[in-house]
Image 1 (cartoon, rainbow, N blue to C red):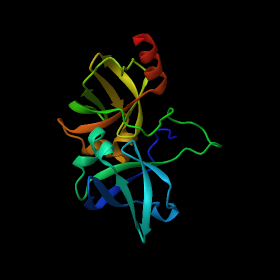
Image 2: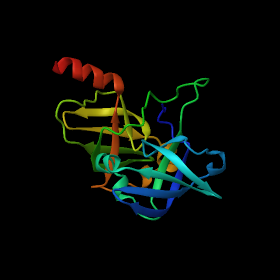
Image 3: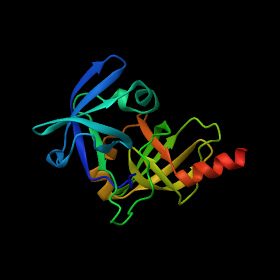
Image 4: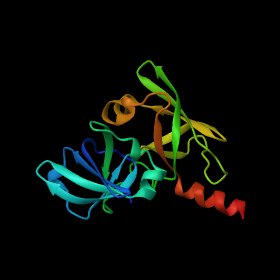
Length: 194
């Protein structure tokens, strides 16, 4: 379980294909605090730490994960949003995030609003995933508030802090982003479909 509040960014140092899986080697500021078998959200995708050596650690993405997320587009030097699991004795600063990416979206607009940013995204919709204005959405692991909602897209407003300390500042129009829709909204959408 995560909150969508990004702790740090990591950098992809090595990419190694192993059958249909990919091992990603990363560096990050808290590598020395990690443990083998620990869950860590990477752009909102929960991956297990399988190896730690010096300042680097390794996670494995299986084929199913690669098909549902933007991880297959990572390259050497890619900057990745990171969050360790939520502690049960702390505040929930973002919203309830499972670390299970629902689908990818595409960035269709980036607008500088004199220091803050307004980012618009679209996604393929089958009615299972919805957003609502002032509701929660997770984009590349970041807990964000929906500013504008449409049937197959939404917009979010990014404060300067989030822009500076996550990988949002690296986005370009046409980029794929990982989306995890609000868990409560997903349950409601499913009940209404029945």
